Image 1 (tube, rainbow, N blue to C red):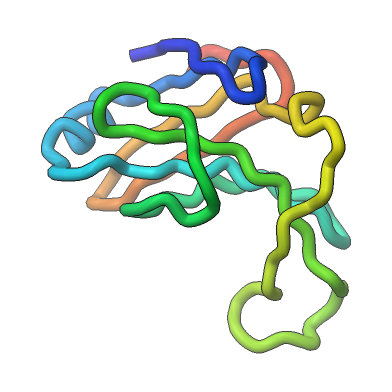
Image 2: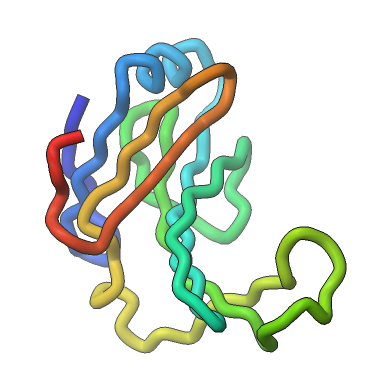
Length: 125
């Protein structure tokens, strides 16, 4: 299934695999998919999945999916933190709409949600 949602008034092409559609239909509550644009010593694109809203509101994309976009950053580079990743904080972007991804793909494989997104025009997936 492919549909278009709007985030900060920008179109985002949302692609759900058949497996993702079935897994969403089987849920009792919405799934929250957060597209994280990570600024630090590098730029990383990552989709995080939650069972509740972690960082504010999102865009409802069907009755069991909520999508959001969150630019984040770290305060320092390097390994001076405990755990897998350094603590994140929201990145103060004045015009978030300029950084909104163009597409988001969500799949469900081996009991895990998998997501990817991109900043260029969507390619057939």
